Image 1 (tube, rainbow, N blue to C red):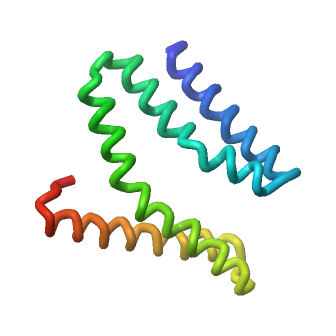
Image 2: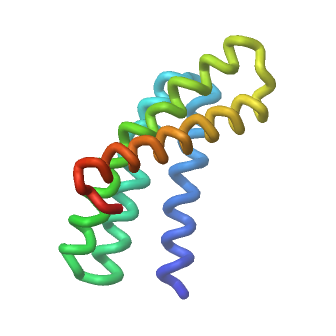
Length: 116
């Protein structure tokens, strides 16, 4: 149980840090948010829990594969917001565009024999 509490606290601190720094500088907040901290934490927690390097390598590869379609969100979100679309609507639309990107990317990968 202590392990889960530590995971939650460490992960929460990073989210709060990004949020608070972003109030002062969106670019520095963006820099911190763009660091693969979540991925590194996930890799760390997975290895710490399983001691299985193969699972860590598989997760790392999966992260790499899906970085490209996830970037679609960060293209769509500012475009919607700059056009005056309500934040929550822009968030939903950007998420939808990103999910469509994931689906399209998965389809392309399957054409090359990559099964996810």
